[in-house]
Amino acid sequence: MQEPQSQIGLEIGEAPDVVERQAESLRRPLAALVKRLKQKPPQLAVTCARGSSAHAAVFAKHSIERHLRIPVADAAPSIVTVYQRPLKLKGQLHLTISQSGRSHDLIEQTRAAKKAGALTVGMINDVASPLADVCDIVLPLGAGPELSVAATKTFIATLAAILRLTAAWGGSGDLKKSLARLPKHLQRSSMLDWSASFAVLTEAQSMMTIGRGPTLAIAAEAALKLKETCGLHAEAFSGSEFLHGPVSLVSRGFPILMFMPADQAALALRRLEEDLRRKGAAVFAAAHGTPSQGRLPAVKSGHPETDAICSIQSFYAMLVRLAQLRGGDADRPRHLQKVTRTR
Image (cartoon, one colour):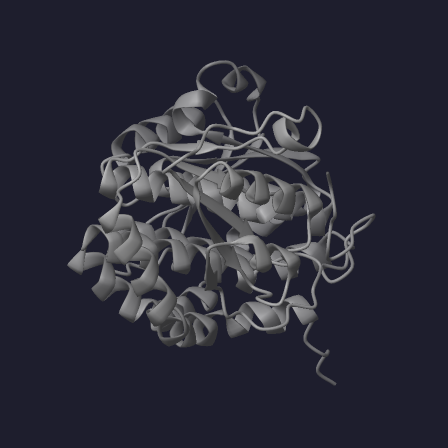
């Protein structure tokens, strides 16, 4: 008798359809936003997010800075909620990213930014939420209900929405074409076999994930999900930051999961991969090319940033089985609930 599929597995499988539908649901609000951004171009963008959405904000920083050369900063909501010191954001872009739209600190930070004169934009899955009410423009993620505590399809929907914003704002034709093909590539990504990592990760007590450029956010998201669903202590690092101290933790057999970018950042990360193997680490690298020992397959989607989204989809597909092998339940992470309200 076949075991019933987990809730998180079902939602991972919905991601390609979510991304395909999103193109139409974002068309009008995105056009309205880009019109305003071009009429009054901001000199700075500020992001505000928690959890997986904060990793999406890291992805937004890379994409906006890379394509539009506008600096992106991460807001600390406690400056408003605890210290009562709203930021001077007149004329700037304030981008709040949230699945539920119900975290008090995000709402208060966004309200303060709006009062300060910022253009407040919310990337939100629940468009009937309190956060949506305080934003000038809402970009609906369109992922539909997500019942699993650990976010998967909403995270992928957020990354896709960020790239749609970047492509529309910066006029990137290549990125637009890759986004149009992304749903089918996500389907392929779900089918890739990452079981080569199971023997090591099933027994691991601690590990690291590494990325750079478009894959830094992916590494951060993977580390969070390993903690949430597998009870596995994992920390994420940029390939460059890793060399400023954390590399000293590497010992023989220490597990490291690398998400290789498909752009100019790849060369340095490949060198790091080689160095870590010489040190005896158990390195698993998701990368293009012929699969070999320690290499995990990755989908070529036509653009480095959509490649990164495909890599987290492959990771999610592997994660469900890994949680089972470690004796956990990916649908019911310990001590967690779906909506977290902080201030």
